[in-house]
Image (cartoon, rainbow, N blue to C red):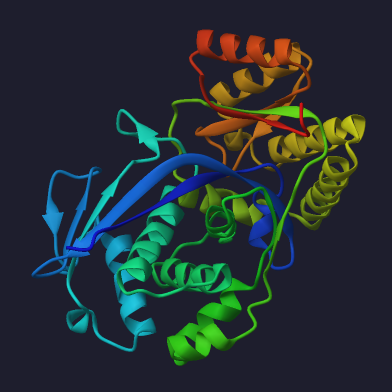
Length: 334
């Protein structure tokens, strides 16, 4: 019996939170290799199992498995079939991008959709380009009412540090109402995804506050507060951050991250949960620069330390403050 296994990870924003919801805005997003895994094999009927739940389902609508089921419907449409016409399979998903029932906030919904599509592509012997996989995954989330920028999908699919330029999702939603999937896939959506190799020598540190936040709720709360001033400040700081990473300009990088941190603080106080404030303060006290990542309200924050001792001190003090060091990597051959 042929059995296939695929995996995906998560993502965290360096720059562009909230602003990226506006078409044409840019964000820098980093891949986080904390993995979800899917195994798929032939079966008498479609069977879906996840270690997030204590039950198995088929294709009868189920709230817990809604994203998985929706991705299967998308793949069936792509193959110009109904789901009941698909060669049946058993799909088993493991890895929750969380701990003790709390999510890390590194893109679990995007990971689930990409993971399911990758598993189905392997099972049906399809070769999907990154671009096609992105469009299929974004289509799936949009059909489910997701209000995100789809930057998480771009980063998770590339498994890399990327610069993402957002597209007009309202425009696409209108086309989805009247066009077939085949026609939608042929459209020029207007997004851009570029891989980034940073030359700046720094430790990239991720701290998990252990305070889960719901991204969609935060987006709904904050998006109407975005002013042209915020959008311009975010874009300029993102561009400065990108240039500093590429030119190894530490001073300019620190300034850009600090500006982004301040812009998010000014946008809405709810973004900086007290645990995120502690995370940033500890990093700053050790000569590093730090900020919230993503929608805020909890979840994760990020810090950039410029020597080994500072990175170690931050992780130790984070732990003492109830913040879990989740992930770290070195950039620029540090």
